[in-house]
Length: 161
View 1 (cartoon, rainbow, N blue to C red):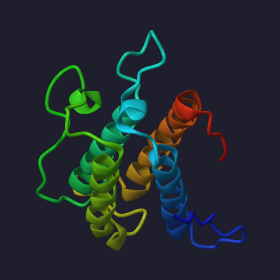
View 2 (tube, rainbow, N blue to C red):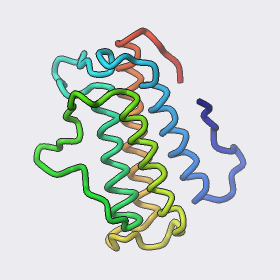
View 3 (cartoon, rainbow, N blue to C red):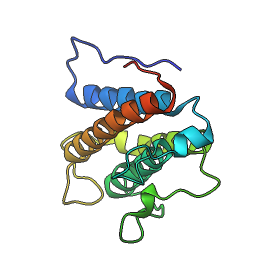
């Protein structure tokens, strides 16, 4: 799996924003790829029992589904956030690194529909611009990649960017 760092001399803000999100997406996948199911389901932070590598991936699937695909592109997909508290962190027996990486990549494919809109265009949910949604998803992904950094190191000692 290869990550591509966005161009240093980028001139198109919209393209650059998507490139940074793509970089973060691939980083999230790299952090979970190769973990066993037990390692990825471990919750090593006692005060955060749902903070697992699988939980982070599952949450990122829900983030992309809602913000990019439903609110952004207007796709007719079911939200993965039905319930309170947020159920996107809850694991089921079928959740594995492989299954959630596949689900995450599927949402990337679904989100391609949003790339057809310009950054200043209104999203399907007209309370937001595409620029705002993309910035929000990027910051949310970056925050959780930080969690994955820590979780991966605690799982098997692997570090890196």
